[in-house]
Length: 489
Ligand code: ADP
Ligand code: MG
Image 1 (cartoon, rainbow, N blue to C red):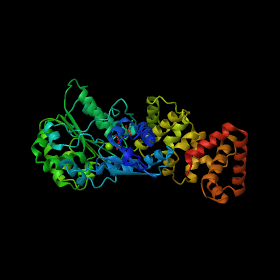
Image 2: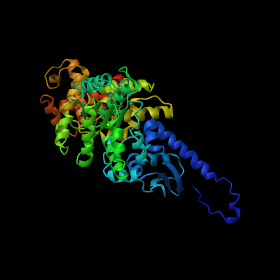
Image 3: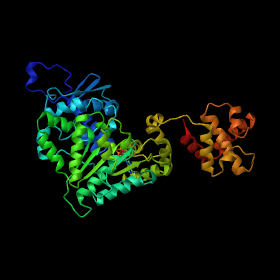
Image 4: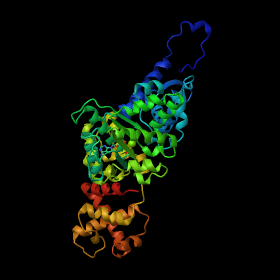
C-alpha cells in the first residue's frame, strides 16, 4: 500500500518501513474512527467495517470491499463522505475508488443469489442492515440461524410516543406482551420511510426474546423481505429448501420488514404464504411491515393480501412538530450533549420529512460539537448542516410568514391584515412585512396588498423600522433572525 517509489532488487530484502505507509495507515484509522463516530456502531459494523485500504495511487485512494453488493451500497451511501474525510487528511487524495477486492468475488451460491436478486437498491433505506453471516446460506439454513441481528438501540425504551405513532406503538406493546393473541395476529405495521417501523419491530423482538411476557427463551426471527427472498433463492440453489422451510417454521415469532419488496416476486410470495399459514396455524405470531396498507399492495397475491389484513393493521403517520421536538430532546439527552432548545426547534421546523433524517442531522451536530469541543449553537447548526438544510428548502409564502409570525407573537392571524394599530399588533405585522421582503421575491405593493391592502410606502417604512430596531436591540434581532431561519427558503 502506498509504495510510490520503485525499489531495486538489491535492497528488497531489507526494505525499511515505508514512512508513507504508516502515515496512510494512521490517516485511514482516523477516517474509520470518524465514520464510526458519525454513523454509530451498528451502522459501522454492518457496512463499513469490511472496508480495507488497498492503495493510494496519486490522488486516488482505493478501498476494497468483499462484494459487489457492498461496493454499490457504499458508493451510494458513503462515497462522498469518504472522499471528504480523505481530503481533510491533507495527503493529496482527491478521489476515492471503492472496488471489489480481487479474488473475493468467487461465485458462492448465497452470494450469487444475492447479487442477482438485488438489482434495485435505489432505495437504500430499505436495504437489509446486516451483512454479516450471509456467506453460507446452506449451513445457516440448517442451523436455523439466519435471522438478522437486532439493533440494540431499537427498543421500546428509546421509542418516543406521540400522536402519529401511539396506535402502532400500543399494538406493538400488546404483541410483545402477549404474542399471538387473537385480533393481533398478524400485526401489520405500515407507514412512510423513516417513521419507526423497523424500530418498533426490533422493540417487539427484544421484548419477546427477553421474555417480558414471563416466557423467556422464545425464538424470534426478524428479517427484511429482501433477505427472506435471498435466503429462499439461495436455498433453492443449494437445494436446501427443506432446511430453510423447517428452520422458518420452528420459530415462535416471525417478523418480515418492508414486505413491499416481495411485490412481483411470485415464488417468494408463495413460500412466504405457506410459511405464514403454517405459523399462524401453530399459534405463532407474525409481524409484518410495509410502506402501504395491505389493500394498496398491488402485485401481492390476493390470498396473501387478504391474510395479511385479517389481524391488526396499524399505521404510523407523518411526524408532527411536537413529536419531532420530543424525539430530538430524547436523543440529545441520551447523547448527553447540551443542545439549546432553539436549535431543537429550528431542526424540528426545518426537517419535517422523517425521523431518520432528523436524527441524522442531530447526530451530525453532536459529532461535530464533540470533535471540535464547541457548544452547539444556531450558527454552528446552520453551518454544519447547510447541505441537509438546503435539501429541505422550500419556497416560503407570505401566508406562511404571517402565520408563523402571528403564532410567534401570539396574536391573531387576522391582525396581519387588520387596521388595528396597537403596538403589540403593529410590531409583529411589521416584522412579517420585513420577512416577506427578505424571504420572498414579492414587490412592495404586492406585499402591501397581502397585509390588508396597505400602501407600498407602509411596507417600506416597516422594513426600515425593523432593520433599525434590530440594530438597536440584540434580543429583538435574535428573535427576528430565529423567525427568518425557521421560514427561510
Ligand atoms: P422505518 O423502518 O419506518 O423506515 P426506522 O424504524 O428505521 O424507520 O426509523 C428511522 C430512525 O428513526 C431510526 O433510527 C429510529 O430509531 C428513529 N425513530 C423513528 N421513530 C422514532 C420514535 N418515535 N422515537 C425514537 N426514534 C425513532
Ligand atoms: Mg425500516
